[in-house]
Image 1 (cartoon, rainbow, N blue to C red):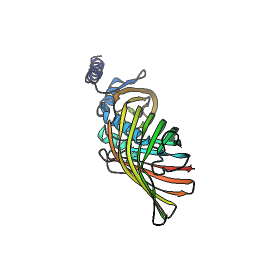
Image 2 (tube, helix red, strand yellow; image 1 turned 135 degrees about the horizontal axis):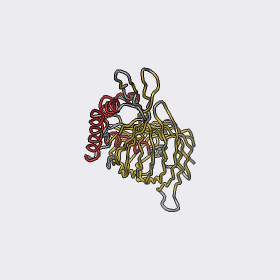
Image 3 (cartoon, rainbow, N blue to C red; image 1 turned 90 degrees about the horizontal axis):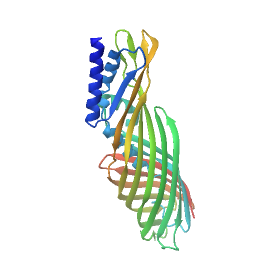
Image 4 (spheres, rainbow, N blue to C red; image 1 turned 180 degrees about the vertical axis):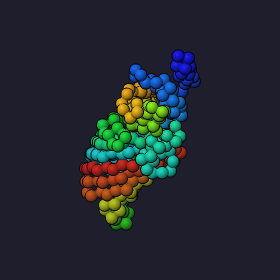
Length: 332
């Protein structure tokens, strides 16, 4: 009885410390019969996950990076309309490794918290109009994207809405008898709304004692609501009539919030047989993404008459984040 009371006091005190310090908290309880000592042991294993503000921010950053799917920044100059389709993936790596997302769980187990995330934004469509009745060099568009997709330990639910606006600051010019088309200079901006719910199924190492064992797996759910206002200056070249490259620089102004929640009910085994369950719940209070995101942008593609195929890329050099996508479309 004294041992159980001390265990209960320990868990209560631990929870109060977590709440009162403003950290996130992951609370562990159990169904009837699960020994308090096992619950306490699992709770102590979760101490390093009790504050994951960097993870919340990393996923929000990746969400902002992915909002620039199907951009038409390298193909202004069309006469009337443009329709582009495709998608983009935003990456906020915790290191310089390109495939960090394959080791996402290991990073969390090793570090407890890290500014990292990946967000998939496919499919997305954009329709743009060359707004000559308003201003000859003005292009106005509307963008929509939605995905509900599961991959390995990930599940993505992402909604994108946008109103892109571009202005041809310096008009395009033909060079070398028309073999090269310099696309001039353009300013790209607009406003974009991004809402996402990203789930990651996380497996913690097994916890056991003489008779009981459990693999305390749980789901980390990241919810973010963001508004992104980009400002870019870009240029481009089309050569040999079909090859197109573009490059530029800019900054994203980002407003919004991101939060994490945790839930799971892993099975507890007694001498190898199912006995009961742990109940894992918790949350990381709302965190804001980086407000200012300077970037370099580029793309490589093909322009076959009215058809375009493009691979856009952006590098957010202050945070080592990046995005890459694919775009197909029609200009006329």
